[in-house]
Amino acid sequence: MDDFLQTYGFLIATMLQAGLLGLSLYFPLQAGQLSLASPGFYAVGGYAAAIMLTNPAFAGLRDTLGNGMFPLTWLAGAVLGGLLGVIVGVPALRLRGIYLALATIAFVEILRVVALNLTVTGGAVGIFGIPQAFGFQDRWQYIFLFLPLLLLTLLFARQLERSRVGRALRAIREDELAADAMGVPPTQYKVLAFVIGAVLAGLVGAMSAPFLNTWNAKQGTFDASITILAAVLIGGSRNIWGPVVGGALLAAVPEVLRFLADWRLVINGLVLVVASLYLPQGIVGALERLGRPRPPQRPTSAPVSAAEVKS
Amino acid sequence: MEFSQFVQNLLNGLAIGSVYAIFALGYTLVFSILGIINFAHGAVFTLGAYFTYTLVVGEFSNNGLLKGVALFPDGSPLSGNPLTFALATLLGAAGAGLIAVLIERLAFRPMRSRGADPLLALVSSLGVALVIVNLIQLLVGAEIYNFPSDAYGETPPALSFTLGGKIVIIRTVQVIIFAVSLVMLAVLGYVIGRTKIGKALRAVAENPTTASLLGISVDRFIVITFFLSGFVGGLAGTLVGTAFGVAGPYFGVTYGLKGLAVIVLGGLGSIPGAVLGGLVIGLAEAFVPAEYSAYKDAVAFALLFVILLVRPQGLLGRAAIQKV
Image 1 (cartoon, each protein chain N blue to C red):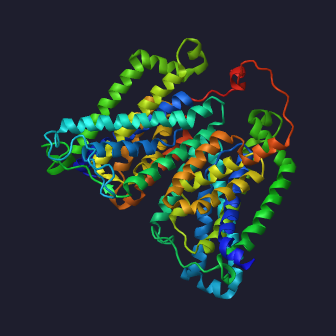
Image 2 (image 1 turned 135 degrees about the vertical axis):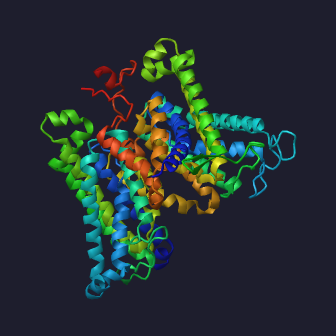
């Protein structure tokens, strides 16, 4: 077991972390909102933790709290993520579809440029020498942080889905206007789902800063947004297990392909192309369909899209 | 700001803005026809620059791959001739156009025939971008390549004039960029606005089903769109490459993102909008005061964010009709 963890523990921790980030994007997606802002909140949470754990300004607090400092950084990451989520979410969620996606890309890019130029974030170099959480000796020990958080998040997501709020979110995803007409206020629920995702991303960021030991502007980039989005879509965006499976899988691909050396990023790209072409429902969606009896064949008349009927 | 400084910024802004404009045209053409954003457009931009470089210099220092493929190697009677360079640029852009067609064939068409979620097209095009960028890195390395200084022949490196006692300098390459962009925009505007091909393209953009009922081969026009899109993208790549050097495989990434800001600012799917958006962002960047120049890269996205909140359809876009 020990050998196993020494060899694969870090990979498992990375996979769990990627699953968590996938879930942070899944919450707004549950309400039909494509947000690519997760890496922004993740970066802010990580910066909060990195600054609190290394900046001389917090030295006194660190001495008093000892290991209690780490939960405090998680709280800070989550709260900052949530606050930022409200600030960005309230105006941005008036937008739909690709426009919301582009607005959140803009948000992430602005944050990145700001982080690159502030002194407190360490500029282009970033912050390094972040102490290990609770004096962990090995990186795989972060499994003890990421796994419980993942389980809690899944439990929360499951409860949310079954609650009134979850049904409201699904109603908005299926048809916002109809939901509105039925008395479900779309804006409030959309912001709520967005903020839940932001809190989660901020929290994961705060846990990841010690995990990665160093934190810089590369943590929150457009590339990161895309990696997370790809994970969710490849895993499946309609089921809570989709983001987890997708995140874990995409985090594992580069490691598994290590023997391909320089070619693995090329293969990574091909995986994205092939998966989006042949697994339109994501892996979890495809598995679900396998387990279910085939739906009755539809009549083979020419397909007419709903939009055309309506217009 | 002094007047001479103002004119200087204006000229710089127009030059870079016109590159943004023609680059963004490629995005907006594809969006207007297919309603998807081709995230591989930045990679096509990079390829355009690399293709031209290959034709002109034909040798990459990294591993000697592509050695001797130059059409116009150093010392040949044609090298150092502006016309030769122009020809290489056009060929490079055409190569980028063909790659864009290939991308359509491999990454978009299979999806279109199944009516898949446009989000998946986005991921698929990102996968393509990842493949292209990393293939470049594997094949020719991550170095910066500079076009030979005599690419334009005997033209002076910079033009200058005095204005109110201060000298305003504009680099020749900036003038060329501006001129080429204007010509390109005029040609494209003519093709789309006045020719039969353009008419068919607009019909496909308006409603593919009706267009196909009218006997327009939709697939063929999608191929034409992708070729045009890749052509202008690749052309922009060479233009920027001549001004700043071809800065490695990730050369196009920033342009790819800024291009998004440009087309949304101007209005998604609007061709005049892409031009206006490009010029606005180019000028806005040129007028960022020197002490804040580190924040220059955020200007485009700040503008994008603001315009989305104030006028989501962009400066020249039509408001989306709410379907009930």
